[in-house]
Image 1 (cartoon, helix red, strand yellow):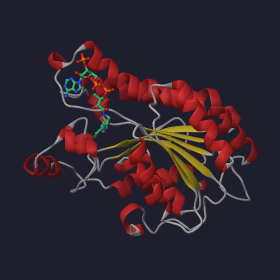
Image 2 (tube, protein in one colour):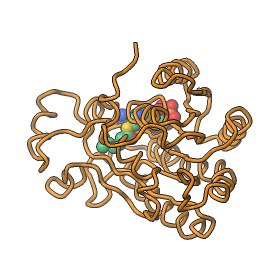
Image 3 (cartoon, rainbow, N blue to C red):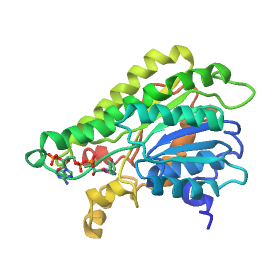
Image 4 (cartoon, rainbow, N blue to C red):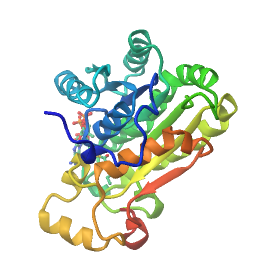
Length: 284
Ligand code: HXC
């Protein structure tokens, strides 16, 4: 069954704005990642989604492809972002089969709740490796393709959307520090910092690099882990100034903005999509 557009994308965006483009996304089978991919594919792009589980990744690719007749969505499972060689092979396969990589979303992440006293050195390292080193590996595996896309579809581009966009998915925890999330906060701070360096080093090639920092997004695995009971979630939502939880659609819309022509001059920054939650509550 096709997922209705309203569940993953607002009506703000014109059909076809990403025609002839390809998005490469790690964590693309996850709740936020698949909404981002659906939105970009709906608006004309083809996609390659990367994940650790072969079954989950291939099934998600099939589902995402249903949003637009004629779309091509490649699911490459068995790829851990901690393994650079596997990621590089996936990026090269994406270009071979779909023709290019014009946009990248580094969305793969790892999370669990634990106080510092309950974090082994290996537990801390596992999250740093998935989030921070995984993002670095994604940059290294795709940057040559993004540079090529940016040179072929320059920013601004009178004849269509521009190319060469890198986006990572961060968080707001590290703005204040966050109990039980020391490992994730540290990893997300590294990701924000990396995007600044990418913007400075690759901006001259026409590439942009930004992060989206989601707040508490309803229905995601992250929130299941962070607030497992309905009561905890209800209490948390009451403190969000915008008066509601975020939706996967909110993140998909922010992604479309950053990849669209409307985001041409946004580079090296973090777009916080959290209903001002972190300002009130600190870190979420
Ligand atoms: C303490 C824990 C733990 C826990 C695992 N570890 N869970 N320590 N509390 N709850 C420890 C293990 O004991 C081990 O340390 C180390 O972490 C590595 O665990 P492994 O299971 O061997 O690692 P791995 O199989 O690579 O799994 C990585 C993972 C896992 C992060 C631990 O949860 C995972 O694969 N997650 C991916 C999916 C995911 O997390 N999605 C949610 C992302 S949401 P020792 O010392 O025993 O060897 C998100 C949103 C954040 O990021 C922002 C929200 C607003």
